[in-house]
Image 1 (cartoon, one colour):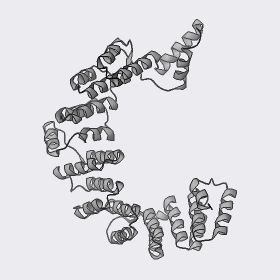
Image 2 (tube, helix red, strand yellow):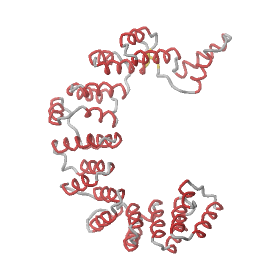
Image 3 (cartoon, one colour):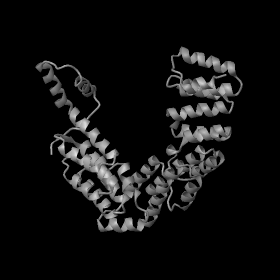
Length: 382
């Protein structure tokens, strides 16, 4: 089976397609086109055939698609991936695996497709076995592969049993990657199933894994689930607090966010890792000047005040608490860096009725050649 590189969308390739409809060229010109095809790995005939195979499959004509596939003089990885997916969708995993085994080059997509086919058809042993083979083959699985591997499992007892039989056991990094996949897939039920596997695998004691779960619930705005997990965790660290504090803040529960921060202050955790920007935003939204000043003092002690995000949050906090003197002093050190502190101060002026001051600052911003963003214009709107 002759393989060439997958089709690409380079300008040279598009140019070659266009020339197919033009009048015949001189031999010298044709040589230039052939050289371009070799250089880019682009074969218009292969791309055209791939499209036709896909069309057959979309029509439900699996035999017609395979006949055309077998007749293709040159195939690339995309060609075979298309045909494998056709077999998977038809439920013919045996033929999909046979075709997979003939491939010289396999991408992560190729492995993930077949792993998913096995998992969705309750053939968990083959799914895990192929996943382990993927590792041995030197192809790194991504979060999609990991999510696909577990997507068909409903009973995690069977996952543990199969994994142990194959000598594959999940690690803390596996769980973290899988939970990251759950976030990106926006699948709360999937994450809850992984939580079940964490408990059954006795990984709940691992603060790294527990924090990944905490982050999963936080990113899905499951505040109650996040708090329940936090309270049940055998071990906490600064990240655990940071995630839950941020979760409260994102969901507008500012008092709970600040209360948890007060608790954090009495721990032994590194103060340099505190979520100062989030806390300052919380203090600003709650108009809690006292708390804002306490946080400000800690940013000075820990040198976190040198961070741009923290500095911008300080400007915003003081401005929203009507302390424009403090806001302007911090603003003076940040004004040259980005439009964020300008927007924060302009918005605060306007919101407190100081429209003229806000407009003056906007004009000054333009003179300083700091590019205004949509949020800046919105803050000075009618």
